[in-house]
Length: 276
Image 1 (cartoon, one colour):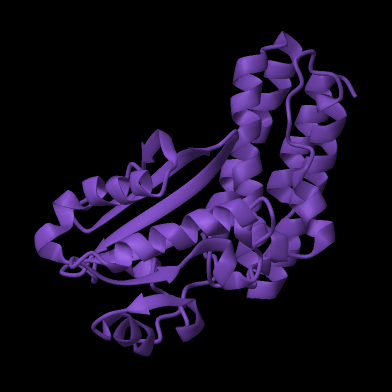
Image 2 (cartoon, rainbow, N blue to C red):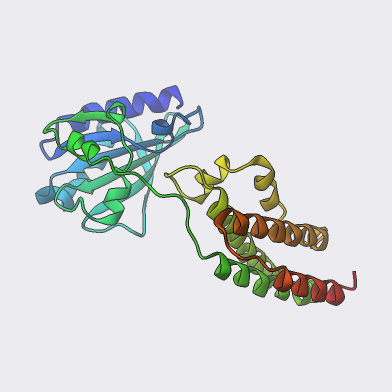
């Protein structure tokens, strides 16, 4: 983490420690997985007294202002509720802008699924402070996350249904529809790979993908749509072959039956449409 941001984080923690309604705090994000670098943002979870929970956004912003930074933006997550509030702040300090994420958990709603995600897998070394012992109680629950899981058959059907569309959109040079379909194929390929090769029980797909085999990561990097559509046809041909290869391998790993019929049929028709 950037040293200036570390100072902001330290000063903020000193402020919130003195708030009666804050029961504990712990680190979150890249820092707890030893992945933090000079570009990392600050991620702090605060466990808040439920009786004061609806006022805590005001208190947090007051603490930030007290440490001589300017809040230039507050972005509330769409999942914010009476159980959890995650606000992302852009803070101006001197001429620098820093990202500072604060997660407020309602101590009376800790069974909420989104709350549980934010204390699953935390360790004693992640604790910033624990006034009442409740953070240690959460650690003692020994909650662990999950490996990625999805319906392989459904993923296969989704992929080839959308792959079939790309031929006509390429012929029409319809950038917007093609771009949208490529995004769906990309997300589907991600889920297929993670269904077979996910190795970590934390984070979203973007985190998990860093831990799958390097050669599999490369299979995802051709799903893009330049303005003039140059290279899309060749990229797609490669992506579809990779998807077939990856699906077969995932099916073998999971003991599922794999048939090349669907993919081969769509690819052969696509080649005919494109005049390859």
